[in-house]
Image (spheres, rainbow, N blue to C red):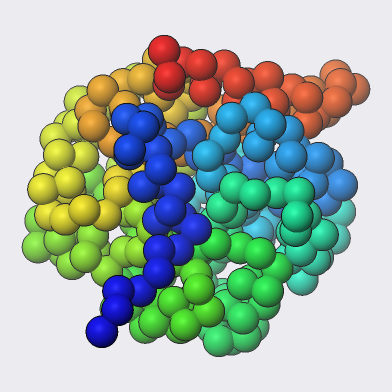
Length: 272
């Protein structure tokens, strides 16, 4: 039996690992302030050195999100952004956007559409993976099989409070990479990361070859570097980027350009 071909996410992490580099994965909320801006920002992030992108689908009750990303989702929903429109926008980038896109969504929209249908449509739009933060491991194992059948990686989350036995199960079930939440609580900008995150990174890496990316709380270059020094394979930056974009929008400046400049600073810091 031949081994399964590597997925786009696995390929990207493999390339970075061979280069000794840490993946930079920005997060942005689709439709904030509109989908045309999201489209331009995705291309700007790619040009600025992002390795993967986490693209949020706006939802009215985002349990894992802090105030910055909640506000972004509210702005997107106020403009009438729907999951179908997000996927149509992503599909329009085929041939231009070459980095893997991981869709961030919650269970309700996914279940409302149907797991099979959602995965089929996400794959057709060009998505490479899914993150569903409120999906229990047991349901995640079911969805992972459906996602894999459509060429998508289902990325599972590990929290600092996750028991060791369950952490091992999650890490083994996660595809593409394991998402290590750096704090107990919701997303948001922090001035410093807890030192125990470094221990958790090493604990996960001792459980298998699946890459480990750290998110929730990385606000700038120093935290991104710290994550790299702890041995993580990737740094996910969400609230800090969303704040930069909102500030640019409020000042009447090009949002994509502001996002690109911030991304370039992070890229230089991670590689420096």
